[in-house]
Amino acid sequence: MNKLLMTLLGGTVALAAATSASAADSDDGYGISTDFDTVQEGHYLATLGDCAACHTKPGGKPMAGGVALETPFGKLVAPNITPDKATGIGNWNFQQFKSAMTEGKAPVGHLYGAMPYTAYTKVTEKDLRAMWSYLHTVEPVDNDVVANQLPFPFNVRLSLIGWNMINFSKGEFKPNPHKSEEWNRGAYIVEGLGHCGTCHTPKNLIGGDKNSQFLKSSLLENWTVPDITPDDHKGIGEWSKQDLVDYLKDGKNKFDIASGPMAEEVVNSSQYWTEKDLQAVATYLKEGEDGDHQTTPPDPIATDDDRMKSGEHIYADRCAGCHTPDGGGVEGLFPRLANNALMRQDDPTSLIRVVLAGSRAGATDAAPTAPSMPAFSWNMSDEQIANVLTFVRNSWGNSAEAVSPSDVAKLRASLKDD
Ligand code: HEC
Ligand code: HEC
Ligand code: HEC
Image 1 (spheres, rainbow, N blue to C red):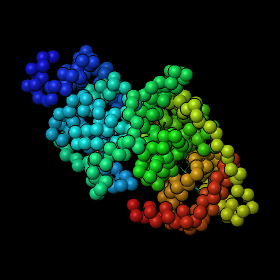
Image 2 (tube, helix red, strand yellow):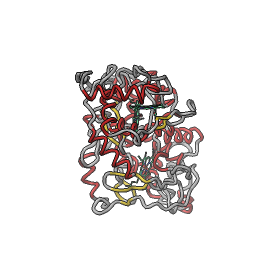
Image 3 (cartoon, rainbow, N blue to C red):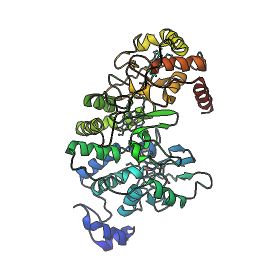
Image 4 (tube, rainbow, N blue to C red):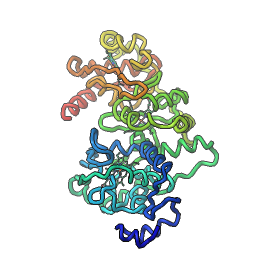
C-alpha cells in the first residue's frame, strides 16, 4: 500500500514501515491482515489465551476492559483493547502490541504481571500477528479505563524494572527436539497462550512464578490451584490422556468437576479448543518435563484417631448421600472424593472453602446443567469441618496432613469479609 496514503490515514508511519518487511500478503503496513483465515486464527488464539477473562466484563462489550483484578498489592483494572483510537489500542502499531504482549512494555510504561506477558512472551510472531489482526475486527468501544489503581509505592511503574529482573525471562517458545511434535504443541500452549502457570505455579513473595516448580500448585483467591504435573499422589499421574481431554472440554471427568477459577477457564476458553490442541495439551501434561519426579506419599492418619472417628460419623450423616459411602461419587454429578489428588494437596484451602461456601460447577455447552454442592457454614462448626476433611484426606487411598479447626476459622472470617 502507498506509504503517503498511510500517513494521511493517521498513525505512526515510521514504525509501521519498519514492521511491514516481514508481514503477510494482505498486510496494510500496520501489521493488520484482513485475510479471513488469519482473522479466524487470531480469534481462536485469543480464545486460547483467554483474553476475555480479564479484558471483557461479564455482560460487557468484547475486549472493552473494566474487569478488576485483586492482586496482593492492590487493585488493577484490565484496560480497553478494542481498536478505539482514543481509549483503546486503535492508534498502536504492531511493534507496540508485540512489546506489550512479549515484554510487558506499553506506551504507559511497564505493565504489571497481572497481564500474563511472562507467559505470552513465548508466543510466535505469526500468532501475535493473527491476534493483532483479529483485535482490529472487534467493535471499537469508547471506554476509558484507569488500569493502575494500586496504592503508593506499588503504583510506580518504574519499580517493575526490578520485578522483571527477578521474575521475567523474555523469549519465544523453543521446541524440545527430543520430544514429539504433539508434546511441543502442548508445551507451547501450556507455557504460552494458555498461561496455565499463572494460576498453577507457586509464587514467590513478590508474586513472581517459582519456575523451578512449574505447575506444582498454588493458591488464588482462597482456591487451592492443584498440582498438574504427572505426580501420582498430588498431580494428574492417575488420569489418562482422555480424562484430561474430557476435563478441559466438558469441565468434568470421572475423577472431578472443575469449580471456581478453573470452571471459568473451561467455560471461556478450553471448551472451544480444537480436538488436536486438547490432545496436545493432554500429551504434554501426561509426559511432563524431563526433570519431573514422583513425591513419596505420607502414611494415612490412623482410623482410630479421634479426628478420624468424628469425621467418619459426620461424613456418613452429611456427605455420603451425594458423594456415596465409599467416597466413589456419581460420575458427572457428584465428584469422587476417594483416591482423588485434589484431596491430597498440601494446602486444604479449597476443600474448606467448598464445604463452608458450597460450589456450583460451570456449565459448558457439552454439559449444560451443573450440579451444586450445598454450603455448610451455617450448620457445622470449625472443628466438625476440620474433622470431616481430615477423614476425607486420609480415607479410600488418600493421605495428607490433618486440617486444623483454626484454618477453618481463618477462612470462615475471610469469606465473611468478601
Ligand atoms: C489474567 C488477566 C489478563 C489476561 C488473561 C490478559 N490480560 Fe491483557 N492486561 C491485563 C491487565 C491487568 C493489564 C494492565 C496492566 C497494567 O496496566 O500494568 C493488561 C494489559 C494489556 C495490554 C496493554 C494495554 C494498554 O493500554 O496498555 C494489551 C495490549 C493486552 N493486555 C492484551 C491482551 C491480550 C491480547 C490477551 C489475550 C491473549 C490478554 N491481554 C490477556 C490482564 C490480562
Ligand atoms: C485462573 C486460574 C487458572 C488458570 C488460568 C488455569 N487453571 Fe487449572 N485449575 C485452577 C483451579 C482453581 C483448579 C481447581 C479446580 C477445582 O478445585 O475444582 C484447577 C484445576 C485444574 C485441573 C484438575 C486437576 C485435578 O487434580 O483435579 C487441571 C487438569 C487443570 N486445572 C489444567 C489447567 C490447564 C491445562 C490450564 C491452562 C490451559 C489451566 N488449568 C489454567 C485454576 C486455573
Ligand atoms: C447435595 C449433594 C452434596 C452433598 C450433601 C455434599 N456434596 Fe460435596 N459436592 C457436591 C457437588 C455437586 C460438588 C461439585 C461442585 C462443583 O464442582 O462446583 C461437590 C464438591 C465437593 C468437593 C470438591 C471436590 C472436587 O473435586 O472439586 C468436596 C471436597 C466436597 N464436595 C466435600 C463434601 C463434604 C465433606 C460434604 C459433607 C460435609 C459434602 N461434600 C456434601 C454435592 C454434595
